[in-house]
Length: 364
Image 1 (cartoon, rainbow, N blue to C red):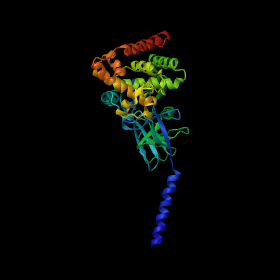
Image 2: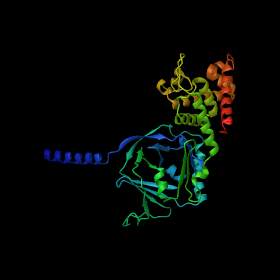
Image 3: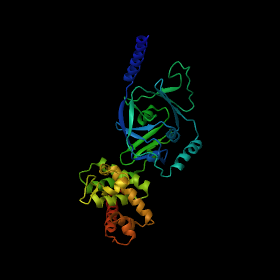
């Protein structure tokens, strides 16, 4: 009896592990999408989304969660048993769509809902995506996919990503499938524009002036640190932009501080124990939860610098000169009056130099 039970148990375990090996997934990293996301003319800040848009294999992946569904006009249902993701276009009027979306934008208000980090995900090649146009009924009785009113989305060899029970799909595959009438366009200096209205081209939402300004800022950074690539400089610009918005600091002011402190060298280390782009004192960073290793990375270093400057601006009622002076003298040093404004003047001079570069180069 024991041998029989053991045999049955082993058979079950073989079956279980066989099924795992058949559908084993690659564990991958989806990079956080740092640039603009404009959906039907409105900017959806990625850090304000429960599940951020990601980049994987140079393709933009969108989460199929409820929040993104409301923003883009779809509802998604994942059948894990059949390994089928069903995406239904919602049949809403423009007014109804606006009513659905408004609460999402209204409740964001700069609230950070994710950590702006890459996401670990399973790359699933065994999932089929069925797209249903608005008004199409999904029925189990249909003899075929075509009969059900669905269209199989051609992923072109790309996987579906799954992270924490959220399924991500490549935007390009859904757009090219044509079921929903979506269009999308991308610019390296601006980001992605998406239109869910078949009568409005996504390109109409592109902001050329903003893209030119970002391109100019990245170009300026590269004049100060010639070892940087355009991609690296653009990444810095968008971290300055993002953390500036989050912490209430003008992004160009953060850029000017970094210019003075390190000439945009993320590996800069001073003899006084300051490290990274914004030359954060390690002990100060530690008190905010940042390690020395983190402060030598672009993202956490800019985050820490923006937090400190944001707090200084609050402490001094928005007085830029005193807030910037405190970056060099410390908040208590400025409050006690034992400081001078030479450092602030140097930073503000760099701020003006950035402005001049943008104007002279025709970027603004």
